[in-house]
Length: 94
Image 1: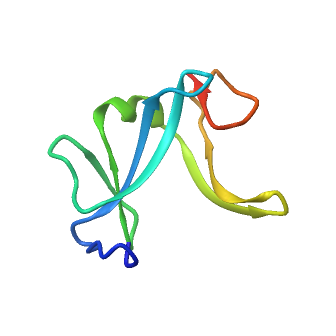
Image 2: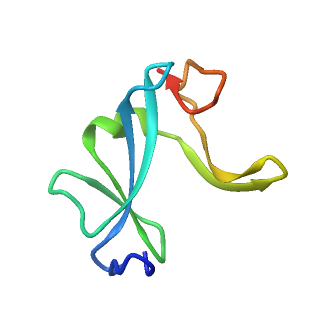
């Protein structure tokens, strides 16, 4: 957020679920300047997480982690609502 010049008291990380991918849905992460009027806002200490109402139904109980391994690094999503996924790991079914 500091790199993008986003003030932590107003901005945050948007976590969303969008239609797409080979299994039906895909995750998206984006830093935003401020929340939308209908967002759910989760305070995570040093930063805030914004979730829109559509995405919230698919993100209940989701754990997001940043992982570094020999295969690379990136965010992982553990979603108890997922009923399946694709071979590439970038989308899920619910």
